[in-house]
Image (cartoon, rainbow, N blue to C red; front, side):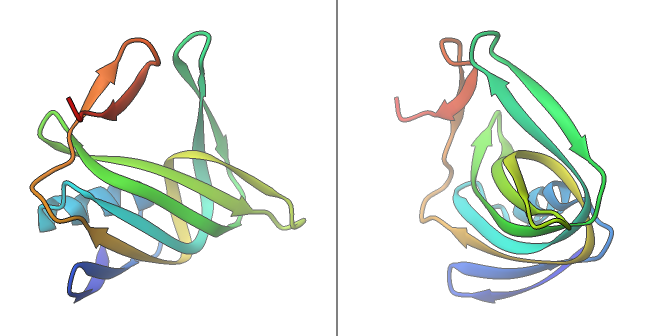
Length: 142
């Protein structure tokens, strides 16, 4: 599913072609017991589902794009909700006509390469809770 090399508190991660990116990152974090960190990288996909939170309804609207696209930037954080790895990922995707789309990344299928850096934070975990006011899963600093 992936290959990696560790450099102190950072991992350079290469996800295997045709894998689901978010699932691979989550599996890597689960394997390494990473519940607090950051992820960033680049690559290429042939399908991506993005999400947009409608603040009026507090519901996500998902849209899938099925075309070859470059990951111009993938960035996000790694935390923990209900004892499980919780990823909050955003992505900017470049299209063939050089326009970009972007938003919250639900999932994407790799088609080419995906090279990421996973950076761990010192500490056991970064917990989240469901905030009823915003409809978001926020950091739990309470």
